[in-house]
Image (cartoon, rainbow, N blue to C red; front, side):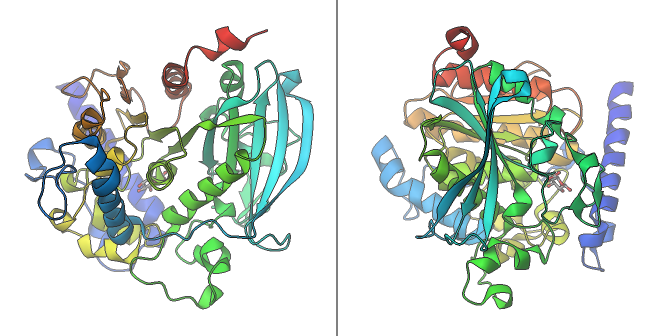
Length: 446
Ligand code: GTR
């Protein structure tokens, strides 16, 4: 009991902390008063939309109807009401290998840097991919692909990684001055990437700074791909179902996968898309939009990610739209304080990954992200997996901490706070081994 009280008050503190962090991005009125609900007893009663009922009211009872009809309906609902509509791959995109070194990280890896030019022009919009390939493993290697918060140079202290020159949030863990990275930020996110561990297990790692695609603030789109690819540039007036920042970031992941498909280093049919927090929301949306991603991983993705919106536990639809008006499409704002009116809920986002393996992870102290709501999304996606002949979670309720569960849907809640840790990576690597066939370290160590 005491433990519960202590952790609840700590978590309330966490909510207040988030409130402070988010304040500059909020409209002046109303949002300051937000009090997150952390009481299960106060979660409203709700009925979830049924992923297996077609818009015309008919039940989906076979895999074919899901694959040919219902999946497209659900995807369209998410495009229209939540993340917006993203453009197709640009016609003239081009790629350039900008650096390559075969004895990186003490010889265990080949490090490459690749630019993806969206319009084919070198002075046009682009993203830069950092790739580490495991030297000991057979090629092509399976890979993890994910966006990072602090620039590619932040994922490892490796001095050879090009320092990001893009706009960056100053709060990014130190080493960012006037919205630009400095050398002091090199390796700042290393614990969140576990580069050596991933490589030793026989996987490649590919990562991109999310700000290459769109800087993360309300007007950031003017400096990003949403302006660069539209005829009116920074004067664009978005329709209510046009892509938001999450849509743009997810689109960028697909463009990186376009590049990975061109080479022989990475097995593009075995790429797991991974993301933490807002970038976990993004990896879920990328996996929904782009079925080439073979595994989808959501780390502590919370509201607008894995957590059920209708529970309104911790961060809510209203709160996220007020704090981050640029993340979702215009229509999503219609559901502020009206979650019950949403034509979808986030379990259907998980279901859009089916029948591919998907992993949802929570952290015990991350109440803001509603760990139980994250679990329940995974749980309520199970009927779709079953229909497609796959086993989902295989458990009825949130498992004990640090006890991963699941089959084609993986889940764990670990001790600790909102973060990506070595423990999280261990589970993702085990999950990928399981679904990509065998323990890669045993199989691939020379
Ligand atoms: C918080 C936001 C969450 C989560 C998190 C993050 O401020 O409320 O939805 O995305 O940021 O991305 O770190």
